Image (cartoon, rainbow, N blue to C red; front, top):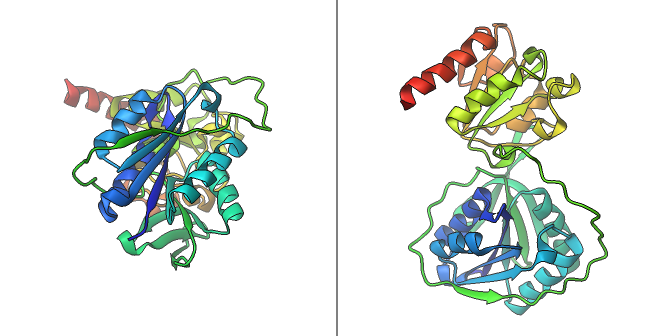
Length: 319
């Protein structure tokens, strides 16, 4: 049975939901005694409480102010030491920007396998599923079992329930704070909106939104149903939304349980970013819009009539 290390991430002092999914997957598919977790950051007490409730055998933590912002050289050196010390065979993480950068470095330095942005795995057999060529091809891959393997999973792609929690030993990891990377300042977004890649529900707007002010309609609706707000490239290129909201081939790739596309025509580039959504709902007044060919449910109507009506309906249901 392989020894598994889950690289976990914290956001605003809380364990990220996608990291929680990865840890649950490991605990469900491998012997709990062989599952270890590691987390780097600062003010990790809340994250650690969430981790120990799930019950990996060990939790290594680096809780230092110097690790509040991710620095690849700082974390990679520590992670390599830990992997060698505990003879780790398999290293798992959610497919975040930081994890992709980190795993690329560490896999190269250790001569290991690497597979990123996987959308599924066949349990402990670890036959991996990946989406390729803008979701036109779904491939299954098997990694060389004679090497260590680094694997990241697309957020919301794993469905797992953790086994009965056991006692977790928390170990403070001695990690050097030296780094060649200098950060002059950090500016956190004022918005408390759910990150797109973590969201279980996403409401996205396209060029039909007409201006940035109209995105308030989507935000009002999203706020009622606990959703994140996204945008198509056409909306971003038109200046209606920032690039951080862009879903698509040149934006963020997401896999929510529910994706609601409002006034989005459905170009293949957009579908490349959200095609693995579990359920797709399209709202567009053009009955010939390509998005309807991909949608599970379609509403042929003006989004400026339908979305406020949906918001009002949710208000009635929640009263």
